[in-house]
Length: 145
Image (cartoon, rainbow, N blue to C red; front, side, top):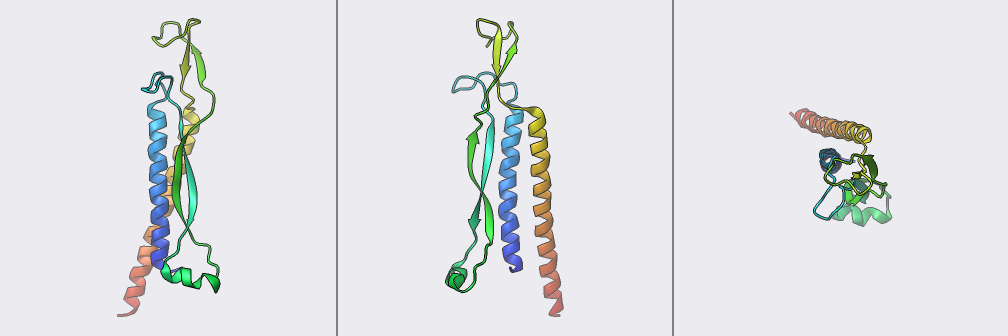
């Protein structure tokens, strides 16, 4: 794998992790949203990643000769969680039902915090790969002097 491919791969992973961090932030921001424009409480969003084969025209021609399994990371979709909503007894809440229970979003703050730390570590790791690739490219250019 050449240095530019490494930079492209880490760039695709950086983009995917950025989207994941935005979705996590949205989940955390809506942890107390009991009424959305669609009706009902906020439904937690989840990011689904997929590996997309990284090939340029030359690599497609060499596919028969060598099998390289280089894949970029990309967000396939952002889904709504099917986890059940929480019921909280709060008869004074404006969205409480006849029994005094409020249907709260299916967002777990602790899970979201752990997920956010994982996404930020993955982002940092891919940033380090991009930085290392850049410094290797610079050193390779200095060898030609």
